[in-house]
Length: 96
Image (cartoon, rainbow, N blue to C red; front, top):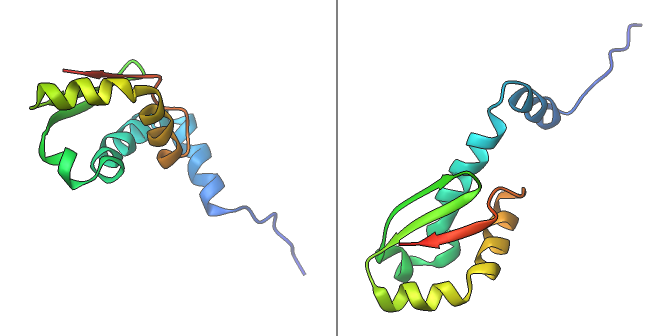
């Protein structure tokens, strides 16, 4: 009887993405998609464009008061978003 070395498909997929340079863009997309989930519907309504560039999440907000409020909780938001994705994707958030 022949035995093959079985590997977890999730591990193989992560390895493939890393080797092909697709892991970082995929995780950046996950952070952008997680923004409305983490922040909730109320804040998502006041959010415009959201994107990641050079480990920084840029968020366009339609309310100056909300921008000031979220600026004070920036570090905890970075931590929550990275935890949601399961990787250290962003280091900072810039509210515009």
